[in-house]
Image 1 (cartoon, rainbow, N blue to C red):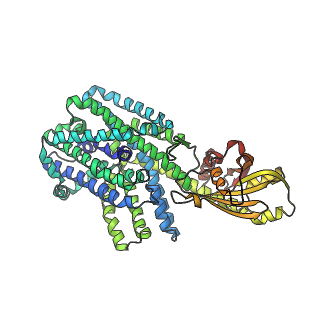
Image 2 (tube, rainbow, N blue to C red; image 1 turned 30 degrees about the vertical axis):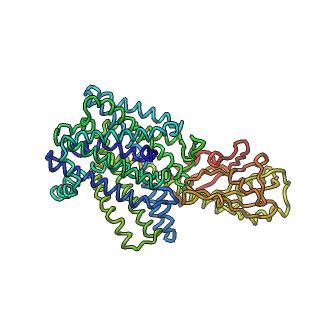
Image 3 (cartoon, one colour; image 1 turned 135 degrees about the vertical axis):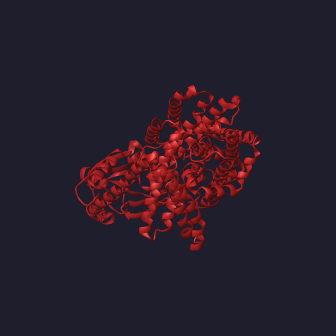
Length: 611
């Protein structure tokens, strides 16, 4: 539970910094007691419906072998409709685009959260305004520089710091509610419904700002595999929801007493002596919220690579105990560059709030759609019940999404451009790999028949084991052809290994290896991994011990084919996409590193593939 408070709730826990300010600061809502009650009631019931009911009660049930997150749900939903290839294809497209939106969210969240915290300096003195952006950039630079050390070293402090944060924002809320306790009537949904029915146009406009209070809700589902369903639920209802409610109502009480506090109601709730400590605590909480999202970007990227939508990237493990703690240098510094661009372009949390929302609400919509297919096809519930369970949430999500479209030209385009660019890369990689497999298959030879012809007049056999990596099981690897052509020898023992990635988080050890003998001490070995697994070919081959095929590390060589992609004019992709794929393929990290092969035992043989 302590870990869940620190990691899962960092984003939604820091939304109190800017949510109320953006709703009332928009100028669309006149300052009247009824309007303040109405808006606070909408805040409370938005948290209740979207977080408490949708995510905590329903979506957390849709786990993929204990794992959560959009990638896990996408894999689960795609499996449930595998008999309907057309529908499965569209679900994959929608789900992958939702994953791309996560990166857009990953750029906006650290920028708006850290900016929102540092802007507390302006409440202390207006003279600090010119230092807000530089201080924000320095904090972000320090945060990204320590990523290579891993989150374990600082992660142990996340829980206690966030507990202090939630206690502090609760105390601020109570401190202001005592002065104006009638704000507590806003818990009654009557005030929200009256505001909606009396001012439907204004309601639609301000929903784009109200949604800021639930940014980070996806993290509840995404981190389920790390903490489990129960700790996340208990922590939400016992710690986070009460703290957020008290703080939002405290801001409402302050606005009833002092409408001028709208310029920054969160920090103006604090007495003068508490301002500096609150700015420091808010900055710490903002860094923790950003850290959780950065770590999530590393994990999601690894999962997407495993599913075959991105080229191999260099992955560094930062913990000897926790396999999930990883660092991807390329993702880290690309994310930092985009965040710096966002901070420099928008300059304030209010301006960034216009960019925030579209990515979040689109992800919420996609999660609801995927949840329907899980409920209907995986849980086998009746159609009427499946629709009833998701239609209400879809309607709510759609209302927030439609409202956020109003911010498209004020900054909402920014995360969409990021997501679209990443989606283009993912689709290009997927389509390019498909064309590449087709090109290789057209020239491929069947392995059993090839070996039979080779052993009619066998070449010289040399001591040791040769492991030939092949992308397709049962076909002759190019590395074997080149080895026979140039070296004219065959090892005493030959393994033809194909690595298969599956749409499940984990593959059990007893299902990791399948082996088939071809005779003459030659075997076809198929290795199976889930999208959360770390491929490790030597470790997997060690499981063959006792199955008639012994692999001794000191006498084993790994033969790889390094393919060079040659774009050609034809029926494949557009020429520019083929060139982009060729560049992505060229820049992908080596197969040897990705499969954890010992570098002093790897032999690479080149070949060209035309697509």
